[in-house]
Length: 223
Length: 333
Image 1 (tube, each protein chain N blue to C red):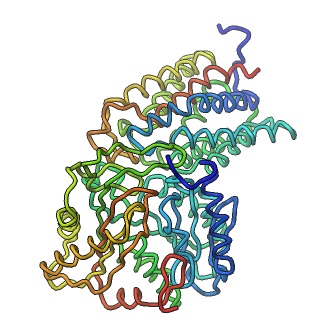
Image 2 (image 1 turned 45 degrees about the vertical axis):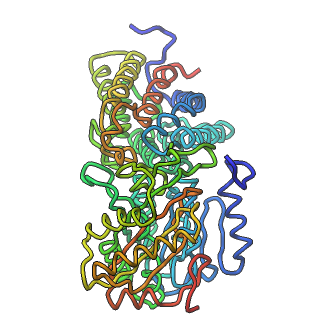
Image 3 (image 1 turned 60 degrees about the vertical axis):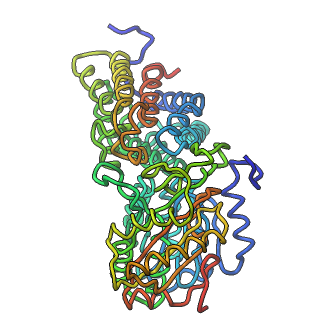
């Protein structure tokens, strides 16, 4: 079904590769994310996410230097705690909670099949919604995260391989991100703009798309 | 960008280093995580007051740490909320056994980070209450937005609650007073120029030299409307009208009137604003029983001001008058 080169389970090595790729992508697109935020927020999303993901990459290096944990929970929780303590703003608690809740759900598992991984992602997204109290169409990261989590679950449930399911999730995240452009913001700093927030793509939804885009590229191909 | 800085990424750390040296013996400055505490903390048996927020609003909050006001303040990056590990460490450091009150300005990031901090502190067995300040009337349609922003009333709440805590009042009372101050305070601001954050290096928003942003937020968030620049009298009328009619404040009320500079406006102009405000309130039968004029909640180098009114009763007045000894506010001490 899938090419032999792809792993069909998520491992700690896969998560590590994913987080590193996300850190690199955020660094590359730092100014782009900040420019999106300047239009409807406070012009710091790229800078804050870059600072946080650089810290996560450093934390992963500490793991690599010691004995890399084989279980998924500790890697995800370490990423979450690092983001919470380095990003600040709204993105820190939201992305931090995403990874902390994923870490709780993954716990001491060493491998997760696509459907199980979809459950872990859904737990993380539910955490983001609990923390930020955003509903779909509020023009937030939830507009990319929620469709991605649902696409992941649907694809995995219909027997898709891990790499196919991740790809479907990335596509759904991208569509969700693009759909934020016409919306009027109802949460976060952009909401102060009212109608003037329409016509701008949400920066949080954009970084959330990058998260799923890098997952599709790396999670099944950790090497 | 012309700023007295070395490197944009070092401004907060270098500012804290300066604060530590300038106020040695009165303040303790902890780096990584960043927090500022009064030197004699924890004060046994006293409710501890902890606040915090993005940097760039000085003297808020670090300048209000000291006897009669805050026990600790947590500075974030410029215009970025501090992180939960900062609030947790500060709360641990200043808890005197009577619990802690976190005073939080209503911004999405601040509220979420403080909520996470409270969760972590309670997990450790610490007693924490939080009050969110949201006095900025410029934000309309609060149901469809993140709600009103916390601005000038934060200083008044920190001073009044600080006095109550110093008198040994229990946590529930101090938190209740904080809610009262928030309930009876209203604010609105105006920007004549944008601010420039060190990292961005250019103005946060474009404001032509002949226009002003009425209802601006303290991070340069847009206000209610952009208008042609006007005389001080007309500007104060617009701000006062919005503030007075919102609570509303009426004839016979005694208020604390707070004219706040945004960082780039001279004190001379703030006194002109105060004079206009005094005249307007007097005409409405509102008595200014106490006042505060100066730059206390700034927005980096933004030119402009905000007006805050707090309806006073005897208790709030006594607590306002009580001694305070901080770098930013000092009397009776």
